[in-house]
Image (tube, rainbow, N blue to C red; front, side, top):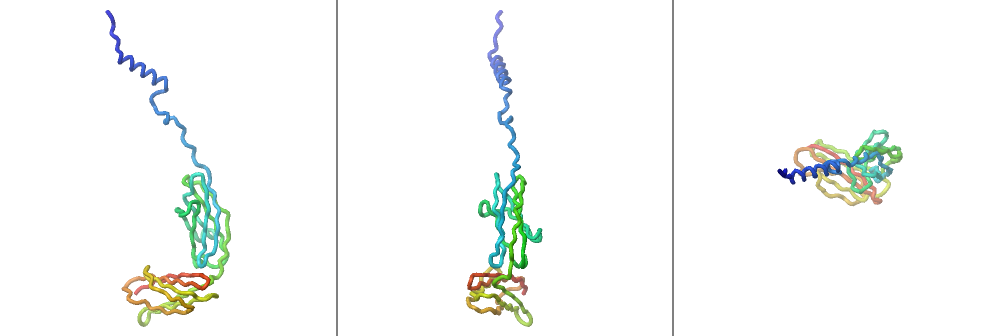
Length: 215
């Protein structure tokens, strides 16, 4: 009597043997080595310059993957600024008002960090802040009657003009050499208001001052 042969069973056996010989049915990607961890530190250099009434801090950075954060520290951390966004690739920049830092010499350092938390510190730089070339002093009086602001401008250069913004709306200005102004806001509702006064001299030196007041 002849024994029947199962072709299906034979093919299954052959298929199993082929897979076994090839090391199983897993993907070759399963055996691929893991990517190496990023251990390369960023590079960073900084500058600090005075521009009218602000100090401009700028960091030029580089990294094999990319810098995600720059931390500026002034005078050992008395003033700190953290930046996580750069409008120009490879450059992080911020501005600090001179009034916030004060006059004199200030030391600035910065730290660059990448996504893997590798970090590098810049060499420290010094910036010398002197008297601003143009200065604005604002005083107010409320009694009796409506609130009135007195604005006095000092500086070596001639005055080009003054501009006033109230609650984000430009109200106008005066383009003259006058150094003394008196301003009384009109038609303001009850509540807290935010006024910004900006001045500029003949050499384009400028200064701004904000005042919050309540009616």
